[in-house]
Length: 396
Image 1 (cartoon, rainbow, N blue to C red):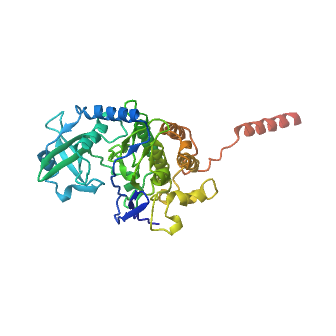
Image 2: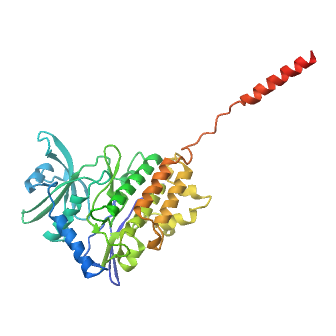
Image 3: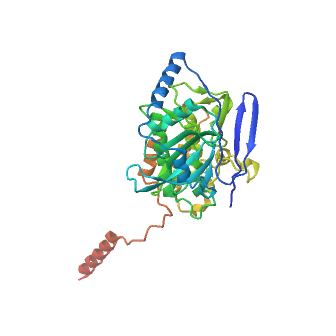
């Protein structure tokens, strides 16, 4: 069965609800929002601003490119170099000189943030995230360009190139070879590890705000890495949330509490992770307009199958039975914890990571289990022979 995503970008302006339909076959698209108010005291807000300002001053590890550098890297932003389009603008594949070895070249991704509405201060602030977050499961940020050229302020971001595309691509029918069950578990673990790092970073807590399969990229070793922090926000203290006048996100992944009340916190990311786990299990888009209406929302569609004998019916048919049913059920159980309607009952990402680690470490049934080979009961055979010998001797 072939599913084609027809995804929606959305925004809520108080009581007004607006949608814009995107008919792209690639990834769901997001949009960027107005500033938020924090549900906290003035002193707490000033503390966060102070942290943010300090981070913005740290740029020692980032390369600063000229616009000419990136024009050359992308062959003058040639259309043949375009590999996608994000919420901020077009995404190009390019080649730059290595800073460590000038004669070596490295492949990079160049994002043109032509749609960015934020001013210079916010731009520097956003860059500061990349200065303090560095982890094997986060796409490496190489540098940026910020200069006036060709009649406008050029804002470009440069990242490491991820040759094996996105998880969303490999779960779709565009990929000839679907991700194996073992690989899906590895991806779930990598993403949980990256998210736990963002949420529990000792320097600053970060809310992704847009966790989805198209933002999870695979490197040359098939390690999963989180990308695109365009909607990331500084975390709040325990029990506090960001309160937004304009809600932004990708439909199908977004926390219902965030949609209804505008409350954004780390638990919003946990909800999105739960949706992503079901995406791994089923191979289906979180919001799909191809099936009948009652089957369009992934979280609602899987609900009748959870904990029932029909659970196998929701597992991605492209796996062709090559999976462990017990581990799929366990992964579903983890997803359900993340999808608690009451955000207070959702586990922290560190706890989620522990559950996924345990799932992978503890054998929960073989993939495509074959029936055990028939073996002779050697003890019984020996006992029978001894009995026969004894009977023969007694007759003599």
